[in-house]
Figure 1 (cartoon, rainbow, N blue to C red):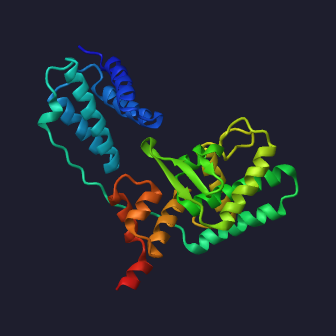
Figure 2: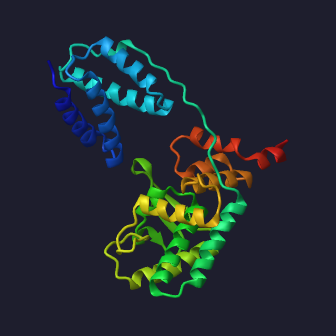
Figure 3: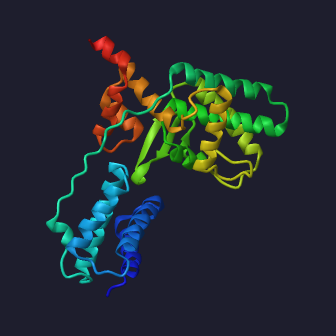
Length: 293
């Protein structure tokens, strides 16, 4: 009887070295494979095993997107096992699994809610009296303003380095998903001024990293750190308690389309690999639909 946990380690190592996957993706793969190995326990892999596992996933009432991702990973795992002669047959090839993904509309904030957030952050900066309060308020304003004005992901904001900023062009190099890079232009003069003021304060802190946005210890701010800042501001402003920083990205994209931007341009700005991902925002732009009709 095979120990598939051992095979899963070599499989993940192969995936990481041959496909140049990110740490986050490998972690997700590891979770999916571990779940499968726990399910089969000490059993052998057969066609029935695979079908039982799919039924098990369905009964767990997971999202269709989660089931699809798990099945994609299992498919690659089966291919690896068969190619290396750990199983006699690739049972996945004889099956076809289809799970339609529910296409949910992106959740956004209203222009009024975004204005409330920006006004609150500006007031916090003006009212700051201590050195730490000035540092914190300037960072928070520059950070949230950048998210609002560019639509970049939280992880992308966390990863920005000082060297990624072309000062003369007001352009930032963004390191996106799948190791893809794109250039974002800061079109709003106020956003740029907030960034410049923050960078001056940041430099005086003698930080331990070249990352643009820092935590209180002078190190790169984490994704969770940015989420904590946004959640605190959100609660202080009394807006939608369910809102997350990703709402700002959705709001940015929706308003671009509502103001006449073409789909292809919005796709490039957001860093979407497929234009179908961007198309979902056309469903939210009610004002644009009114104008068209």
